[in-house]
Length: 385
Image 1 (tube, rainbow, N blue to C red):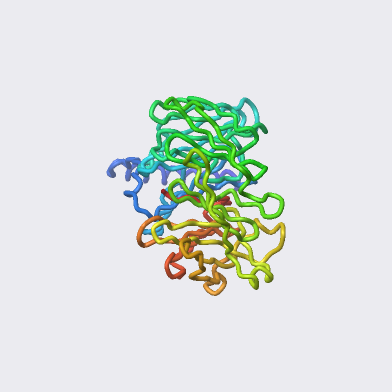
Image 2: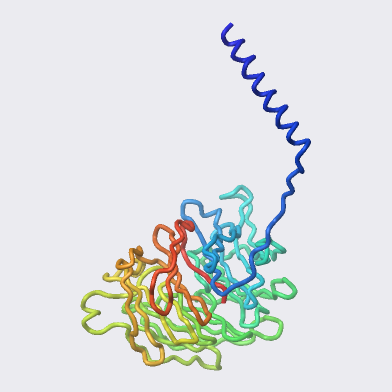
């Protein structure tokens, strides 16, 4: 009997609430769902590629506005995506993999084209099902200087690069890179891949995007005694490679023969003995206009090259001298796994902590500006070019 009375009472409450809702709904204007556009571009917008090893099939690219200090939105990334942004900031490209049943089943690899004003997918290009599924790096998926070609690195474990015509949205070729990996573009008609021998393979393209010629350089990285990080920083056609032991060497692949600069050290003899060295997943950032190279540094030993930086050291690339040294702990900033810097005349240095906090610092003074908590389980940090 008590159960019947309770059921009757609950029914009366339900129908009373329903009646109130219907009465209110008759007088109110129905809600309309709309999709807001992304705020206009500014040079402090940051794109964070988030690949969680706990959920590799569901990667994201988080979009954060450094001026308003607000999360803007996110781009779906599929399985272990490569990501790049067009020079005019209007379009992003995501090279990724989808499986018919989530983590298995029939495989489809695509490049998805993203409208950066809405973050919507506006098209896709099916590519060979061999897109390299790696920890994100800027050089796994990257555009030529004029954005007419998109280069997607492949590993099966054989290595190659898929070349895409962005105007026609078609694959125009696949180039065997003979064991060398990634794509470092030079201008519009060539890219370079790094080889396990420390050499570099440069492939020149013809007008259709097919291979016209290739050239293998002499070794410019001592892979046995001082390997280099793959995430070089770029100044036009010139790349600065930083090594595990804290040396820097430039490489220009734009000519018929590569040009390598003289290696120079980030460390004094005393600092080297103390164990200071670069570390993290994206260890360096370059502000081209001011010739400032930012390096995430930590105290470690052989094998610690993935450890995050406890300090940021700032160097003038012309004088090759350190001009600043920022101890992160003094500002209660956790060590940084990845860093990047904006390209404008009021640059912001961004960093990612191991717990995926996004840190913003004044790139001139090193002063902390903002910390956005838990932007995801992030692997690398990318900004608009």
